[in-house]
Image (tube, rainbow, N blue to C red; front, side, top):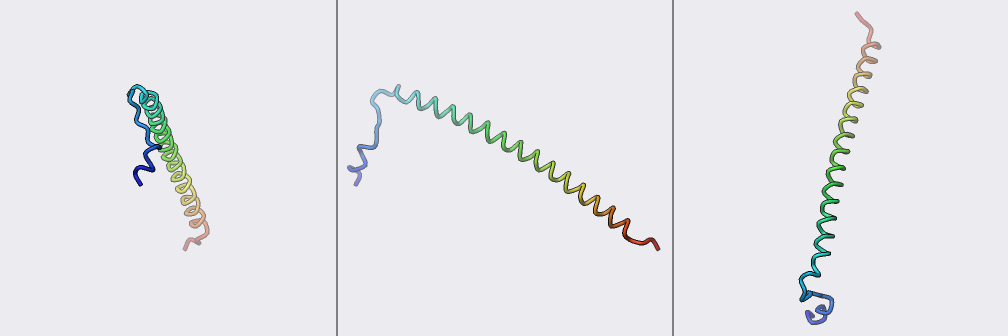
Length: 72
């Protein structure tokens, strides 16, 4: 079974052939880190906006409820 898969493996004698792959890998890892950080910041900002909206809605409901209750 291992003999069948061997033609698909390629380990070059000249190790300088790894350099373009290493640059590509590093480039995409940096891009991944930047994208991940951007998503986290955007998510945190949206969470804060949602909390503010929720607080505003709850405040308005409380005020409306207080207006409806008759004062004894």
